[in-house]
Amino acid sequence: MDSVFLITISAFILAVILIIITIVIIKSNQNKKYKKEIEELDIEKNSLLGVPVLSEITKVKELVKTDNLKEKMEDWDNTFKLIRDEAIPSITDSISDADFLIDRKEYKQAIRKMANIEMELRVLKKKTDKLLEEVQLITKSEERNRTLITKLKIVYREQQNKFERTKKEFGVITASMEEEFSRIDKLFAEFERAMDNNDYVSVEKKIVLLDDKIKRMDKLLADVPTIVLMATVVMPNKIEDTIIYYNRMRRDGYPLDYLNVEYNIKETEKKVKDILDRVKVLNLEDVVFELKTIVTYYDSLYNDFEYEKLCKKTFESNVKSFKAKLVRTNKIINNLIGQLDSLKETYDLSKDDVNRLHIINTEVKKIKDSYNNLMDCSKNHTFPYSRMVKELDVLIIKVSKLEESLNYDLKTIGSMKEDEVRAREQLDNIKNLLKKAKNRIRLYNIPVIPDNYFVELQDASDAIKEIQKELNKKPINIETLNIRVDTARDLVFKVFNTTNSLLKTIVMLEETMVYGNRYRSYKEKVNEGLIMAEKLFFKGEYKKALEVTMNAIDYVEPGIHNRIMKAYNEN
Image (tube, rainbow, N blue to C red):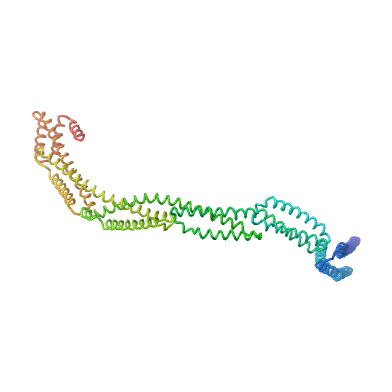
């Protein structure tokens, strides 16, 4: 038991010793790490004011010959002194403080201090880098500037050669272009003098100015010949051609005042002159756009001229067809209006029908007036043909609608006349049919005519009289007349069919009785049947008499009844 306790105590002590040793090692390593970071910050601080900045400033001092460069040199020198005498010592003190905090093992405060130092070093490095860049812009400028100016001279010589080759294309702008080349030559000379005087500030400005002018010269060489051609050749020719075309169309009777051609030509001439004046001072801003706009206007003007010519042909063609349509419509409405009183007396026209005809007549007169006014405008060249075509199209649509309405009225009136004629024809046919039915009845000596026949005959006769009454009325109501005709026709056909059916039954009865007489002398049952049939015949019960006769004969000749009925139905 004691040995176990002793072992446990020994293990615990050993663990504590190991932990202490580990902590000591960690602390020692942490201290070394922070010390190393302090050293790196100190090295970075010392590198800020190394040899490059100081040596470059020394070079510039040897090149100072102008006031501009002298001012810049003083500014750089002050910046360098501010960094060297104030910023660097301040950072040095901060590094010392951080180092002291590390020695005292105040690591949290040391870390914050080092973070601040790192930020200050970044800011200071940006300042020194900018200072070095500005200084080197001067110390290394000669070689760089010579390289740039050589490239610019090569481009410039090519531009001069191009200008000399195409000088004729520049026309009135040639002198302005030569002056611009002279100004560029002068800038090159000023650049050389500035380089000789070590006026590097001025040199930078000269290079930028030369670069801008040479780039601008590229645009001038590319655009000016086109602009000159358009402004001095293309546009004057377009204007001249337009004036000739415009005057010719005016002589041919085209009213073109609405296009304001003369005013617009004057304005475009002023605009072209203004463009040339601006190009002479080499101001090309919006020039190409303005010239294209003017060209577009003249192109659209030519389209307007051609459209007017097309509209004239269309107008003249449409006038012919419209005039024919108007004359035809006017003739129809005049005829209808002239016959209106007679039509109202003859036919029962509705108020709407009559009013519609009067409205159409009024509208036709208005259209005639509008057409006459339009033709006066055409003779006096008051409006352009493009407008007159539209006006005529409106009149064409109006007269077409009136024509459709008139066609409907003509069809209605024509239908009334046709219905009247047809009614008279059908009246004759119905009368003939009824007469034929009566005559057939008279041809047969029928002992008794059924009462229903006389009723049907009377109804048919009355219906015929109603047709006659409607035809004699003034005005005739066509709808009522058609109803009367249909009714009478149905009733007469009913009489005719009744007559045919009656006569057919009687004929069949007589033939059947004659056929049955052969059995009468020796077949008492047949004789009795025939006697009964004769009595029924004289009473006017023809169908019943036929039935009795067939049944009597069927006693002698079984099946005769069916054969007779079949023959009856087939006939």
